[in-house]
Length: 262
Image 1 (cartoon, rainbow, N blue to C red):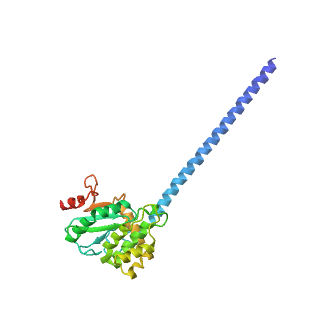
Image 2: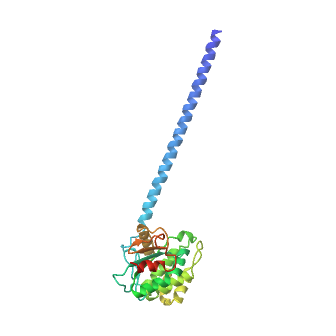
Image 3: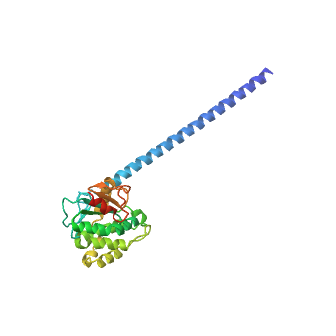
């Protein structure tokens, strides 16, 4: 009888030992899984950092030779529009500086243009402002891979550089023919036709598809982000971002009233 008790006890010990070993192995498997998962997360994070560094390294600097700047462009990526409406024209040095950041795919930029264009033109012509326009590309992701924002901004830079007298009517015409956000946008051929109809010589319009100022557009867009631009349109006066809560520039006359009061 005692022998049977010993045998039973041994069986329980063996079973307990086996269960303990199984638990240890299970814990080891969980530990290994956690380590593998941790390594994968670290790899993803590291890969993301490397991609970001590489991506940022591919962005040319505005002051580098890689980014060919159009006529009238300065170190902020803005193109000066003179009193006569020409890119690179003359403007009073003591007048308030007005910077407008815009994307030709942005429907709200089109609304801003409709509301403020006449006032801005009048202030510019009167020498009441130094006007700098910033054609940037932040909405390429909405144009179904066609990079319309970049191509349109390059077109504006091309016109500013080679047909400076036509930059204002060209930009207005681009908004008059603005494609819907989320579409592929306009083709290079359509942009060239708009340019010709706005008075741009055909020999200039035909060079738009060469993309000569594409790197400048990319660099100017990156610079705008560094300067605090988080969307379009964005408006600065004397390089200070206007808050719409303080200057409701989507209300007719509000922007002009603010500048007149400086």
